[in-house]
Image (cartoon, rainbow, N blue to C red; front, top):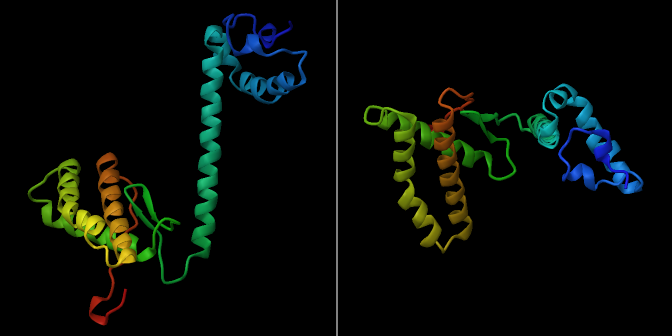
Length: 197
């Protein structure tokens, strides 16, 4: 059987390449469209370490897949920003985009961001690091979150709204712990005296 391993003589014997039959149309297509582009892109690395060919090509495919995903996320974000109403603004907290999002409302994102900032201000003298402050903030909403989850059954929509806000606050604390210097675009505070959000 003529296998793809013939193209890479120094590759390990018992591998994906030795199972790809070059006389088979489907296998040839895989070699042409998947194996060879990766091999060409990683030529220098493969020459340097031919026994690692499969690992090198998989790393390349993973990088390419991540680039594609990142481009898709950016494209969606660009479209969402273009469609955003003029009375809303993008919200980013420590590299985490809270708004725009398909998973929650603008008001939920703002409420979570404001709660987080308020708690950080209140706790900064006691808890000196993002990790200890983040843990304290998560602990501060624990019982409110439990109440919304298990007790506030009369208003299931209201219950879900609170749960989403608590989840967002928790996500913000974790993002802060991971990247305290991360990009932030905080939402403007509401005009509470005017009864507006």
